[in-house]
Image 1: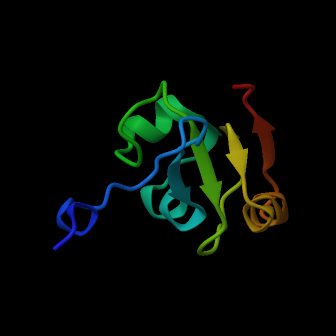
Image 2: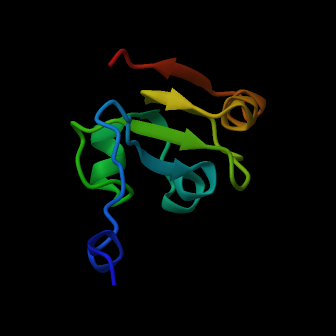
Length: 94
């Protein structure tokens, strides 16, 4: 068998890829977070591991509380659900 078939396949990992810690809107609702919600509060609630890493809010689930969410990125559905509940969105610069 030729050498190139005996060696393991090694994939490519981009060095410029941005990885986020993901948090759903339903998780914020379930933990009962209110008022200003940022990376520190999300870490305290056990939703993310590091407060210094990038955080992205996703729109899975429903939100009934008025919260002001600070994060590095938001999905369009998350922004719509947060604003529909009476809250506001603040993007943190990287």
